[in-house]
Length: 429
Ligand code: SR1
Ligand code: MG
Image (cartoon, helix red, strand yellow):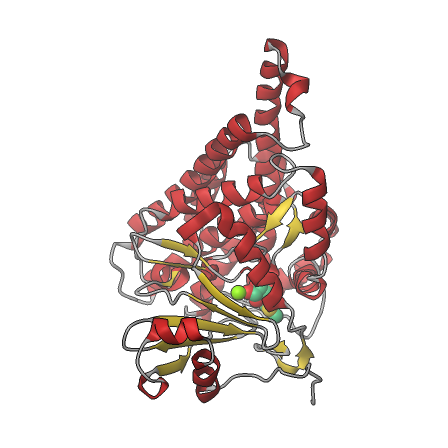
């Protein structure tokens, strides 16, 4: 299929990347030497874009460019190039608050729809590390900090309403990427669609049961409505463990091309859901004898501790920001200035966080289901080669996910979730 692209745009190849970077004086200087001495490799392993790493004698950079279609599927699924614009905008907005928790942005090219940014090294994609049983002691507090900063400081709890509305309007243009989420997470897994895939025939009965489950479809539709209708904060929009590059000492959040103003619980749920997917996948890796730095049971315990530490850390930090910097139009400061007001607001904050946890858990369940019954799967489960073993892990993951979506209100705190995860993992099946 021939796709129309704007004048000035062409997809880069390795030679093209050299010419593109060489034309940027600040980048040439950063890399050093002559372009002939630079090495370039395409390393994109995501579903959408081209990603090049460029190394010179003095330095390096990463070039991420939009393709006019979904890379995972090919030119039959066209996709606006503007996702690079939204990713760059989000990195700038979030970057004001999170500093080195994201890569440094060096340059944005609006004609080539390309972002030039810091090459992260020796960082790896978190999912790969987790499959190999690598512990990341800083991850929970870093991702809690990232979420608290971004989900508080882009919202009307911190900013004037006018400023937030102006940013909502900008990100409202990221419609096609939101459409991917609306279809792939909240709709397709619950109906027949040629894009879906699952471990078949092992999971055929589960897939059929999900399609027939009206209660579940109502619950997922409520979540979808929240996703489409809330403008609480500027979300990353795709905050899974493939959007984290890290070492045990340094965490970076990458790839916010799905950024939009939406419900905070969606980002929080992505973190929790993807950690839980890995938790259930560990039994499969152990069964296949994949080497691990720590025994798998110990690793699973760390994964669940991380779920708990993430939520607890996020909750504490978000409340801290709200108490110290609640300067926005939400809950106007002077309405609660006296003793009675302060104490009422303190109680309100606790209730607010309880509701947010429930939102996050619903979205976590939705994220877990889509990675097993929808189009785009996670290597956590996909790399379990034996389909019987994989299906066993997936069934357990789906079982908890369904509870999170359908019985969200029964999980009163994060330890109720991790306790239930342990029970589900220990059950026969
Ligand atoms: C067609 S894109 C499929 C998925 O990849 C991205 O990482 C998002 O999660 C999206 O839903
Ligand atoms: Mg991505």
